[in-house]
Amino acid sequence: MLTDILVFLSGLCAGSFLNVCIDRIPLEKPIFSSPPTCTNCGSRVQVRDRIPVLGYIMLKGKCRNCKTKISIQYPLVELLTGLLWLLVYRRYGAAAETIALIFLFSILTAAAFIDLKYMIIPDSLVLAGLAGGIPVFLYHVFYKSFSLYFSASWYAPLIGMVSASGILLMVAFIGFLIYKDDGAMGMGDVKLFLPIGLFLGWRLSMMTLFIAVMLAGIVSAILLIFRVLNRKSAIPFGPFIVMAAFITGFFGPFLLGIL
Ligand SMILES: [Zn+2]
Image 1 (cartoon, rainbow, N blue to C red):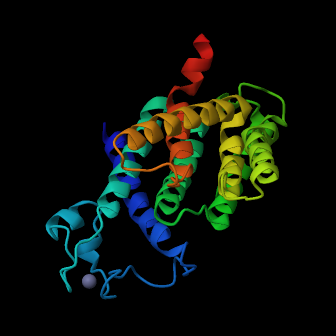
Image 2 (cartoon, helix red, strand yellow; image 1 turned 135 degrees about the vertical axis):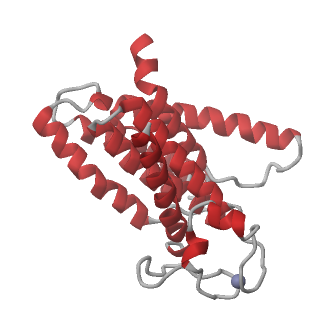
Image 3 (cartoon, rainbow, N blue to C red; image 1 turned 90 degrees about the horizontal axis):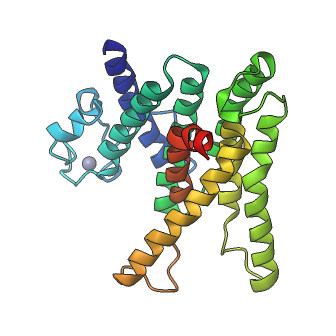
């Protein structure tokens, strides 16, 4: 119980850091250089207001200085990250899988929110994800026991890296040949599957791709029916990939076990 609380609180704090990443990475501002500031008036966010979720509630969602509404993104990302950390810990316990998934899911959370806001997947996030995957790869090579790969072969994570991203790359290439336009299936989605594949192996990344396509299809259909979108609107695919990766991270091994 105490560990659960500690894991959840650590997740909240990590979420607070992810908010800084979401704000700064797309604008190419350094992440660590300065303390967080109000995106409207630029005043420094005081330490007491930086307490995850509680800070937002105590400020009633408004900047202490200029009273501008603070985006719901901040408490949302913090809560989501806290919850993801807790759920992963409850699912896998004190294991290498927990550390790996906590890292991957945090990177993916930042990627999803950046994609929603800016329709891009920053290379720096993909690279950070890949860098975090190196210890997982080495762990697998030495102990041959990283359960998410469903394989003892040392190259399992490498196949994971090129599986779903390879398929998306082909789709992007065919789209380019047909439409002479590389906008339809962004290269960002191809790149996003590199760290996902490295952490989840090829079976779970293919499952992630499948679930992401289904989710995107269902949600787009609903948004079209309710005329939130028209046929020309573009919605980013990244957040669906991320949601799908969360689902496979939690339920994938179970689903593969019974299929
Ligand atoms: Zn302000």
